[in-house]
Amino acid sequence: MSTIAAISTAQGQGGIGVIRVSGEQAFTIVDKIFKSVSGKKIMEIKGYTALFGHIYNNEEVLDEAVVLKYVAPKSFTGENVVEISCHGGMYITKEVLNAVIMAGASLAEPGEFTKRAYLNGKMDLTEAESVMDIISAKSKSAARAALFVKDGALFKKSQQVKQLLLDKAAHLSAWADYPEEDIPEVSEDSIMEAIEESISILEKLLSTYDMGQVVKEGIDTVIAGRPNAGKSTLMNLLVGREKSIVTNIAGTTRDVVEDTVLVGNVMLKLSDTAGIRDTDNEIEKIGVQKTFDKINGAGLVIALFDNNEELNSEDIDLINKIKDMPCIAVINKIDLEDKVDKKYITDNIENVVYISAKQQDNIDELKNMIEKIAGTEDFDPSAGIIANERQRNAIRNAVNSLYEAKESLAMGMTMDAITVSLQETIDYLLELTGEKAGEEIVDSVFHNFCVGK
Ligand code: GDP
Image (cartoon, rainbow, N blue to C red; front, side, top):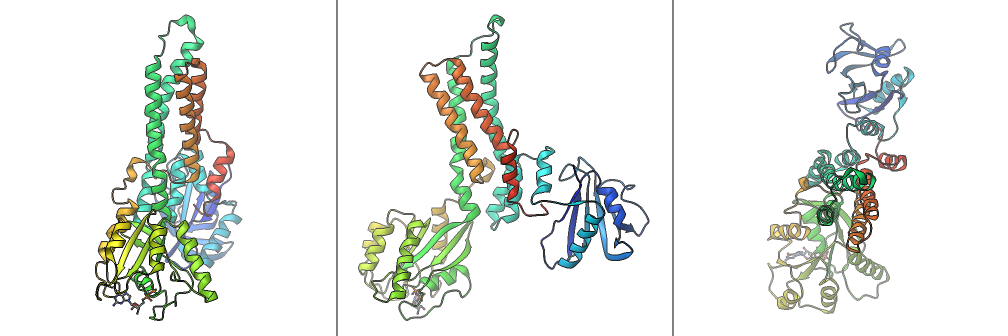
């Protein structure tokens, strides 16, 4: 396998930049372009020690650098690795990378370092995927969840099921293949038990998918309500900076304004929308239609009602539209006189909070309610969590095969048919962890990585 190199730190200005070189020839290649102050060669020094010196391009000094040596198999990729730390900045790091390439390394493809780590048995496929998740995590809980996957939480669950089924499948095959050996028959009850236990573990994992998405991607949240209810004010409060235009002329927020905020453990992808109002104004009409479209696709609706106004037909329409969705009714402007029909709102909507967006009263209560609805309060990533479509499909296929096995057993089919279904389940689990995954699957996993990882 060739020796690869890439810039592993983010592109842009920075104190230091790291160029990573991995492969059998890593030491000799870097020795060609690096001269240490002490005169020592990377080839000669012990693993996990560093040298200080200069990087050269032919006779020209490019930069000062520290090189760190990792010896196979004890490195991220499982190969010989040299990490060159030089000054940060696009120009220098690219020049140093260029020198490494001229000295014989080839440019790494996206995700190739992690792919090699996987191919060298350093991590399973679910762990590799979580490396990518850690890099792109935007919230604390997303990073925490990814770290748990990296620690093998999902892998362990999958191994647990695999072991349960392998025991039965192996026993069944032995019994079928060597009838003369007097192997005790496997009882149908014990097979059923193993199947049911496996289904229960996998179904539980499947149920983590939505939570995984919430934690990783955030919840699509719409702030809705009639003009002047206080939507922009609330949005600015949550986002913490001036984004939408706050005015007291009804209908000023014409378009959909979007932003991402972290509320406790939950990431919200917020859109503040044009107010819901019967209108003849063409531009406003488009805005109102957008609001309803947005509500249809939303994971959470925060509906604002003006405490200082009686409910009107648009408020009632909004209540009817959202009452069966995950939603919070926010009665705003509690600093002003009560005129709104609170009873009508509480009769129809389960979660109601009273706030003053302008005076920032009761905002914490609203935040707590958001966390409660998102269900992230008692989110436990150590129990194993599904991070993406690929993992979900593999587990879903495994569960489906288990249901087939269960049905065959209940219908009194031959043990052969059941063994086939169990084997199929095991294959899907091997695909999940990458212990037995086709090249196509492996490639598509690493395809989404950035270069340098
Ligand atoms: P939107 O049209 O729903 O986006 O409403 P805005 O956020 O633009 O607010 C409309 C007006 O109501 C502005 O003048 C705000 O300052 C005012 N407002 C918003 N929240 C409150 C509140 O809690 N109390 C009072 N008294 N006024 C508020």
